[in-house]
Structures are given as structure tokens and as C-alpha cells.
Image (cartoon, rainbow, N blue to C red; front, side, top):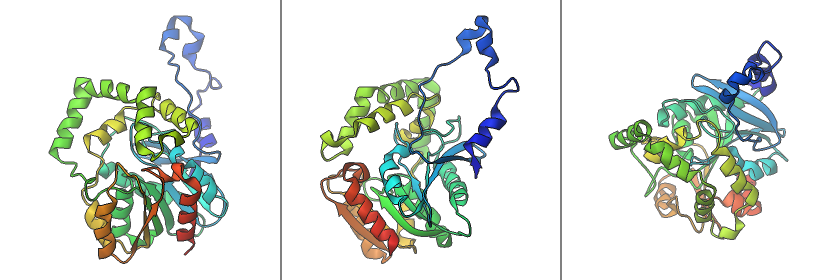
Length: 322
């Protein structure tokens, strides 16, 4: 785990940090102005170095480590779990990360797919370990729940208790990430249609419409959250990972079978007004695996940790304390 300050010091140009292009008026056009993206939480920043790029992480609190993993969408970022992170940090050591390609992490032109993110999870998990720890508890949101269950099914000793909020990978929300997905992704990338599609998805009014679909009560969408979603979409390279998501490349085809094999105590949390997950299909998984539990948060959609933060946090805390 390397602090952000150390990385910045290593990356600073030898002239003291000034961009030489800014001193040459004939090259001023090369300077790209981007909208700054603040950290998702006021924690201690650190970087996880991976072969594909730097993953930004944030640490706060003390105690046994719980790793928080945000969802994937056009505006996915760790801020989705910021209120829950702050609540858990009152009693736990919390590690919140922005996945590669999202939020404050690098957004490289990488081979985005379930294999890449499975490898990313392994590195993130190892970096999140506190002194003397060999396993971590995990709270994941939406599609990345698939990576957690696959990793935990293969190596249960690396994980403790697992909380999955609005999980996917089964029922109506599972995918094969096969040839059709790869063909669609290549088409979106090579024709320029993907950039146009993302430009539409990243518009403020489109983000607002999408968020209103994920809440049981559209009026409960936090305005600061909507603003952050728009800002994260303005970062250079912001279109890359979301296009892989839209194409279906990020779905792990091993997920449904992994739910059945999980040996770690695992809690599935759903809102009572879901749109992008399938609680009914989860009933069969829970019935087939005694390690799985299911809880429904009333008056909530697919982001119960934002729509009903106190109730959701209480459920998560109670499960992690068992």
C-alpha cells in the first residue's frame, strides 16, 4: 500500500512540478483543463499498483478491516458507499476503493472484462489487509458482487463475512460475456458510436433520470451525489470501462454457480423496489446454500445504502458483528 503523497512526489517533473507546456504560450493549446474530482470520503488516500494502472483507495477508522466495493455504471464511483463507509468507520477499519476505470482511479485503455476485474480484486484485497490480517470482510454493490462470490468460492480463507447489496449474476441479471458482447464492444470502440453513446449517458439530465429509476422515491436522490456522478463522467478516459459494462463484458459467467458454493457467511440485501436485480431468483440460491441470508430494506430501490442509509447501515453492522 503506497500513499498518494509518495506517488505524487515520484511523478512530479524535475522543475518543481510546473508543466513546461504552461510556460510556452505557443503550446498553451495542449493544456487540457478537467473538472477536479474530490475524494469520495475524507480518508487517508493510498494507491494500489496494478499492471493495468493505479487504483485509488481511501482508509479510515480502526479495527478489523472491511473492504467496500462500488458498482459499475456510467458514473460508478466509491461515493456510492461513502455514507456507509463513514458509519462503519466508527467501529471498523474501512478501506474504500474506486475500481480501475472509475472515480479517482486511473482510466487506461485496458482490456476491461471480468477476468481483468477478478485480478484487480485479488490485488485490492491483498492491499487492504491490515497488520496481522489474512482475510477481510467485504461489502460489495451490484455487479462487482459477482467477482467477490467467485473469489470467495475459490479461496474462502481469504475472506471473512460478505455483504452483497443489490447483487447480480443470477436470474434476469446474469450474462455470459460471450462473442456477442465482444463484438458489440469492438463496434462501440472502433466506430466512435461508443463515445457518442457515453456523451449522451454523461449528460446531467440523463444521469438525473437514471438515478431516479434506481430510487423507490426519486425525491430522495441526494443532490450532492448527482453532482458527483456528473463530475466523474467528465474525467479523461471516463468512457472506457462503462462501454465494457454496457456491452456485457463485465459479467462473470461463473457467478451463479459460485453463489451455490459459497462457504463464507454471506448476506444479500435488496430494496423492496428493485429494477436492476432479481430478489425472486435469489430465493433459490438462499434455499440451496445455508451460508446465504437475505434481507429486504423497505422503501428502497437498488441503492438502499443511499435511500435508507440508517436502516441499511444497521443491517450491515449487525451482520458483520456476528
